[in-house]
Length: 113
Length: 113
Image (tube, rainbow over all chains, first blue to last red):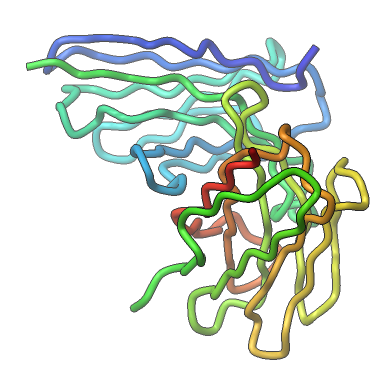
């Protein structure tokens, strides 16, 4: 069983919809949680970063962490065709392993006109 | 400001050969991490270099090695290539080892035939 599980999708939504992307993990030692976006033929880019449990909002993006359930989510409001990409969750134990992230396999999102 | 540059972008090699991939980090960035990305396993951490020293290592066989030069540029080498080494190899750089602001390059697509 992988340490981080993520539904691969694809997830197809109409423009303007609210998108919910999720990851579950098994290792309770993870404390730092990230979401990356990866466009085709590009490397991942960091979208959101949270420490421990709670919510964090940045524009149309909201990241939630529920450590008691070992569950993290990314919500995208008012989705746009430009949001079409693969979304990867990632996590690490502490800042000493900031360079050594454990990733989910990614969810492919398609936002249609 | 130039991003993380990886060369070459695409590579085709034969089983048993060896290959060297190059990564030039963002100017001033001293930490460089390498990841392997495949459809089945997602992104998996290979190793991290900081100040020319390997600081973290993932669970890959000894055929995978790397190094970092005094100008922070990094190379990774894979010897005795196997078909299963076909993947996108991503390099990421950061100013320090203890933050989550790693910037990824676009990767080198390696195909082993």
